[in-house]
Image (cartoon, rainbow, N blue to C red; front, top):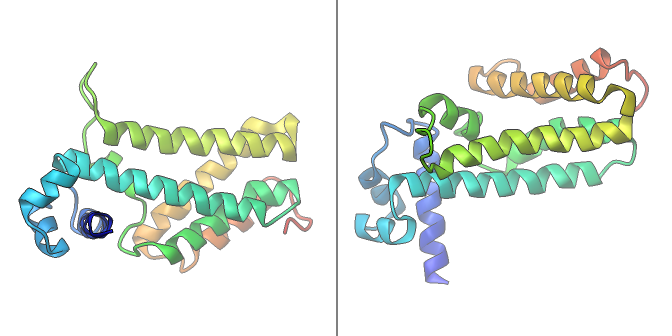
Length: 194
């Protein structure tokens, strides 16, 4: 149990610092200090700063996917299931660190692409987040309207990304709800969608 608690403290500290102060500027010594562990302990658990970042991203990706699934499962209407990504965003933010608008977009914007043929687990997780969003929206769009899959995915993803950027700016106050209503109108889904 102590190992799991230490690991959680390290990940919590890294998540907060990486996505408040920035990944590049945050040293492992600062993460260790905030987590209340030695740098040696941090390295024993995470291997490297890149390993630490990858673990933070993996935890966020797993948490995000679980919350999104809960929101999809909470509604029956196929259009509402597509639009469930927006209340999922609000629900996820309510359960996680408010320090970050989007860990994946922040990571993508702060770190250069991995060298050709190089291995970069954090970059792979950023790509997995994007691929997962697109694939899941496609699955849901098939249920909602199989003749408009690309339009639905592109519209919802564009508005989802806009909601994430709005979280960084701090305006509008509830960008996920606004994005959901704009998506509903743009797709002509004016009737009830749950």
